[in-house]
Image (spheres, rainbow, N blue to C red):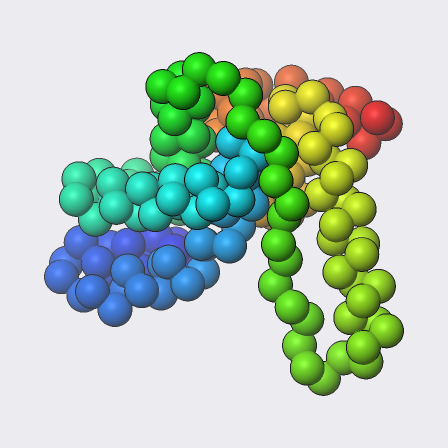
Length: 169
């Protein structure tokens, strides 16, 4: 059982500090993932909060068929898709803000790192949504192909093809 699942079980048993740990571990990745759908960082942050709010209020059961991270990203994806349906229009692309690198790094190395992040983000935004989701979930969220397939509602072979084609683009 991974740390997210054990923390969630502790939360369900009444330990509120476990929820704090879950939020700390997954919030940044969820924001970037949801931002791929809504293309607005502030909206992505709100939908990330909605994801955790849903977990707090509804307390859905987690079954260990997939990892906790896969389960959480599936909830976030559903919330993002619902939001898009309700607003029924494409949202404007916003500039993505990245966390500053640690103070220990040299300023030049920090600048190069930030430029790479921005370049990767811009390249991902130019891809078809399916390619972008598959690449993000696999490489940034570090999900296995089977877990990515579960989140996206596709087969493992379809995800592998999306990753291959996305990398080629």
